[in-house]
Image (tube, rainbow, N blue to C red; front, side, top):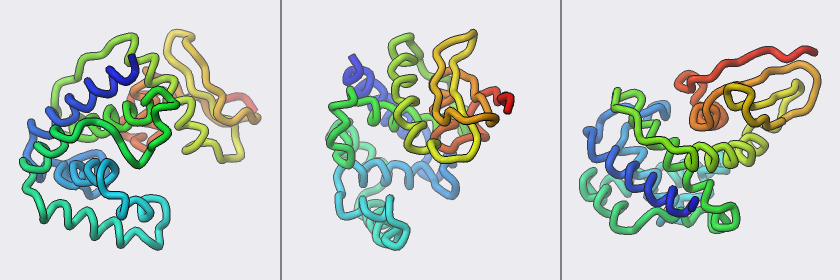
Length: 201
């Protein structure tokens, strides 16, 4: 089921790319949608560019690879290639063991990176998608938000499921629908429709 959701969201990502100009803004600071399309191509098909995404001293290598992708193909041609080569993200070969939820989350987030700053209409949502994204929230939050002195819990609305990221006194509770909490976890705080409440110390 999650693989099917991944495939559907990848198709929607490509469709969203096609609906805007290459110079359109994104939620990624300083990136246009053309930059974002090149980033997705790099993490799918260009292993030489991967180290710079994790190691700052190699960031110049990744930047050069991204520039080469944009020089090699026009925006429209790059979208065609993304569609042709499908949704698998080679940079996360173990994603299949997590039910393809890493890739699903990436495509959902990157679609929102385009949709929200360009005032595009919301995309279809289902309980299956929300549940799969919430499971991804649990994994991603412990990786990206696991450090800190204070407590941090994530919660779905109306008394829904709770994820304890940091079980320490004080801190915050972040409440929202799975896609909104996932955006918050991935650093899109200003765009995420979440409620943040202080926890008692």
